Image (cartoon, rainbow, N blue to C red; front, side, top):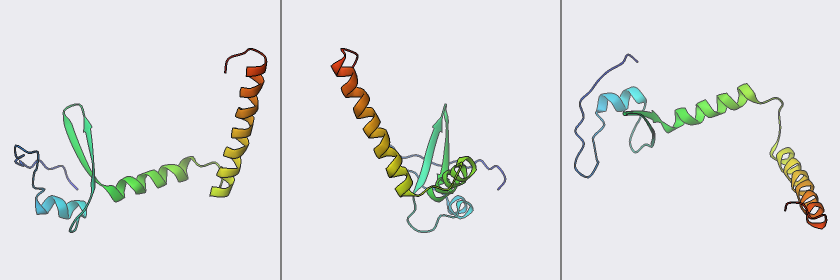
Length: 97
């Protein structure tokens, strides 16, 4: 989509109407949620589905290996056991808790 500038009125309560042409260009139909990003003095609207798609693409790009939820939970349990052991070890020897 080419860059467009459209004047939109913002009511005193903060509400505004997103023009039909913008909703169509963003692929919004009926009730929809968008991500509103404020950077300095500018606002960017993105369909929430695009944010999810970008997050999934980033994950696929940076994931080193295929992992399941069970793998994650197993790793986290092992970390918790290690942390608990270090904490009790420090307590017995006068170290920081």
